[in-house]
Amino acid sequence: MLKLKALCEAAGYDTIKGRNNELATISADLDFPRSPWGTTNTGKDPRETDPGHGRERRGMITIRPEQPGDAAAVRAVNLRAFPRPIEADIVDKLRIACPEAVSLVAELDGKVVGHILFTAVTIQIQPREIKGMGLGPMAVLPDRQNQGIGSRLVKAGLEILRQRRCPYIVVLGHAGYYPRFGFKPASQHGIRCSWDGVPDNVFMAIVFDEETMSGVSGVVRYRNEFNEAI
Ligand SMILES: CC(C)(COP(=O)(O)OP(=O)(O)OC[C@H]1O[C@@H](n2cnc3c(N)ncnc32)[C@H](O)[C@@H]1OP(=O)(O)O)[C@@H](O)C(=O)NCCC(=O)NCCS
Image 1 (tube, protein in one colour):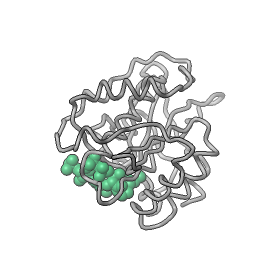
Image 2 (cartoon, protein in one colour):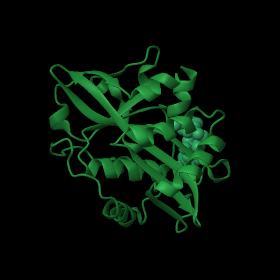
Image 3 (cartoon, rainbow, N blue to C red):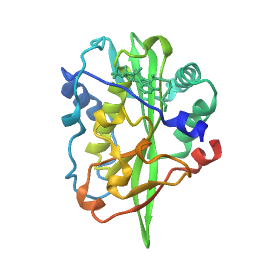
Image 4 (spheres, rainbow, N blue to C red):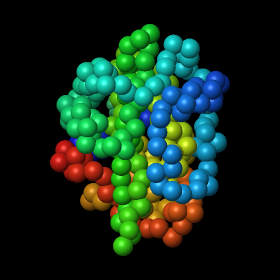
């Protein structure tokens, strides 16, 4: 379980200024399939909950989709940010195994300094399943942490998934941190974690599509790559 928690303790904050334009650029650059869930987005924009801190060294950081040539740099960031190679290994597996994955990098002066991954999760509601996405792992190089980079990665990822009409996103992480991005305890949405022993307040969710998620309750299942790492 400790390994599992380490996988998902993502965090970050951001300023508001200029972000709309940046996210528009990111979305335009990404040729994501439109509305893979076939639903209407009626969810609340997570930016509405952004307190805005203003500590970021804005202007030099670029958030962009991971490219094939970034794999070694992304692995290096994960290896430096985490005490074990578990997260780096998971990222290497999932970028191949998970076709829905959203993988973004933060680039500073041409160098990859941060990375975030979102991968597919499901809630089984017999006879169908409701697909969503799970945030994590994410990592920022130690000497670049607390500069707002992680926050920009989180917000960029959420914006992309909101525009893709992903119904919900879950994260296992710090209860005092994720609410600033709009996450709430998943139990408030009727969603539970599949792993035993996860405290209620650290498994969180954002619901973007209230209509699809109306009346939905159940257990969220991550991909097997995460189970294998525990
Ligand atoms: C977590 C991480 C990605 C955040 O990136 P970052 O660029 O440093 O984050 P930001 O600068 O955007 O945000 C800083 C905020 O995150 C908080 N934060 C950072 N790591 C945290 C942690 N492990 N637990 C709780 N809060 C944390 C800081 O206290 C700060 O909060 P404040 O705004 O209230 O002062 C980065 O610290 C990291 O790579 N950590 C090691 C790997 C890791 O734990 N990844 C997450 C697990 S998937």
